[in-house]
Image (cartoon, rainbow, N blue to C red):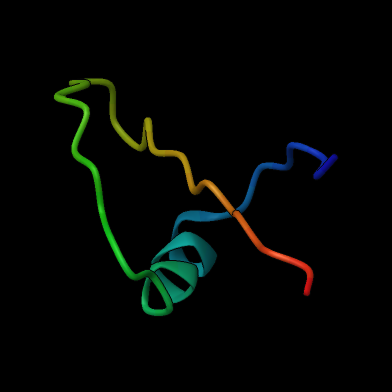
Length: 42
């Protein structure tokens, strides 16, 4: 399991630069964003 952690907004923006897809939830709360990480071990 990957632990849940909070990151500052600037770090979050840097992490999204590596994203392959973005899903908008429609949430109106400022900075209510989540990054989901998935991986496959071969």
